[in-house]
Amino acid sequence: MIMIKILFFDIDGTLLELGKKEMHQELVDALNLVKEKGIKIFLATGRPPFVIPKFHEIEFDGILAFNGSYCYTNNELIYKNPMDKKDIKMFVDNAKKLNKAVTLAGINKMGCNFDDEILEEYFMIANQHVHVIDEFNEFMKEEIYQMMVATTQDRDELILKNTTTLKVARWWDKACDIIPCNGGKDVAIQKVLDFYNFNKDEAMAFGDGGNDISMLKYVGTGVAMGNAKDSVKAIADYITDSVHEDGIVSALKHFEVI
Image 1 (cartoon, helix red, strand yellow):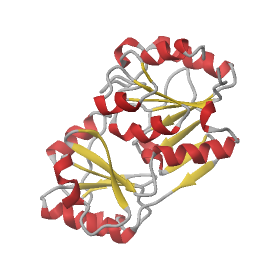
Image 2 (cartoon, one colour):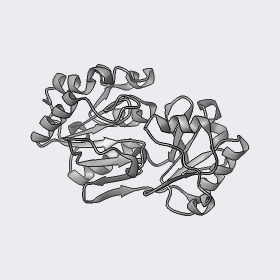
Image 3 (cartoon, rainbow, N blue to C red):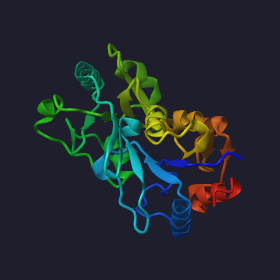
Image 4 (cartoon, rainbow, N blue to C red):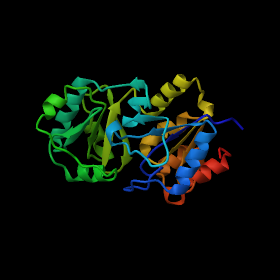
């Protein structure tokens, strides 16, 4: 069996039950056992850096934020991939034609152009709120790493019309994240592996949503949670128990990581 040197974890629906703020104690204990073995642990999330939770009793070695567009350790930036400004404007214009609000996300703040109930519901999954800002057009000129919009999959073509550098990263049916075409959790993982001089076979990843598919396919061992979407389970190397049943702990034991 290949020795695992690094683990990547989605947050919502994987480490955390949706809407919850703390991991189960059994999971925290398991992650600390992993760290004692010298194995790196990274968060891989669609969240911006400033809304990633600080968990009690466990410290992660690094974070892949914005679905991989901004990656860092506790003291060093590994990789960043901001969005094309022309395509940001085009996307916002497309969304307005569909009467859909857009939230822009930068390193230190987020801002939305107008209220949207479904977008608010999307944010509430991660215990966040949509903030409408007056300076939205000025904010658009700053480094933006991700956008969020409340559209369904059948609107993807319309929302991306006339853009060339953007793609959808979706883990919820009624809303999605927009990231660079040349980005994704898989791209970010390779940047992290290069940073540590690890190879893909030495990496394991855990996820439940559509935005985790590229990550699970890319690493040596991709683990889908029992509560994962069917499309995620279909590409996984292993399907573990649900987040409610501490599926990560079960998988770590199955693969003899702990």
